[in-house]
Length: 323
Image 1 (tube, rainbow, N blue to C red):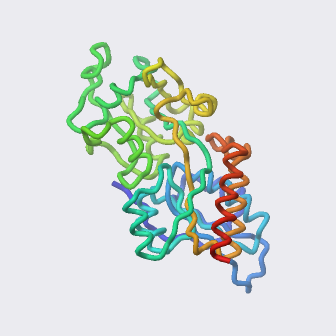
Image 2 (cartoon, rainbow, N blue to C red; image 1 turned 90 degrees about the vertical axis):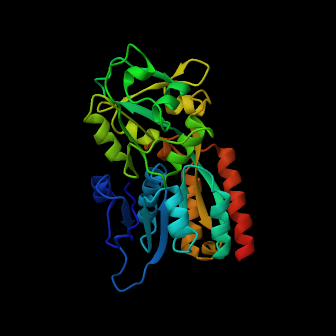
């Protein structure tokens, strides 16, 4: 299974260069392009979820254009990989996450003197995708997904429905360090079984896109943003959570209709890092931008004004403690 545990690049990147490079790297460093070369720029370092990465990347790109004296580095390490390897050890200022921080992660953070402050930054419609040639399936039930993805489950399409092809699954999904993996395991598979391990697991969601696109009997899952980038290359399945088939979309996720695969997205700031004016400025910017169409542009539901205000109140309360 692949894990991105690399450091962050330090080269300056324009917004055009950045967008052209998306998908080529799991870690992107953004730096203001107009700063004096001899000046030492402020740094904001972010690791964590590949699902939240498109939001953080887009916001960071706009931020450095407005704040050329601050560098922002964003890396895809998976929610859990970011917490355990970077954020809780005190190496990063923020950790993006596609599920809430877990108790053992809080304990690790506490041991290292890191206090995580949670901010909601969007809503995702976790999306199950197949090859466009898979014309035999347009909707799956949660039970059928459980049969396909649990350990010792179905091996062939026809094991799930008799009229599906008598062909083996070719499966692509999130790595075990991923919050998407955790959410899918808990929501779809449940506590009485394990997620199967005979699949291609990765934190590079575009690798999942390529795998599914290249195999007629493939299935994969990831955040809606990566489907919205490739609607002609792969096919999203509607999901029946008990109330009939519902297609993943920003509208169904926002309306609460896409259940149970609609989920909140987070970023966590280290409370101590907020004493750095650059980090405080970026976190405030992140929260405010999370309530705008910028989040919808990358394939997620923006937070509401009420959620934004709650995030800002949480930020201000933390700042009072570190002032």
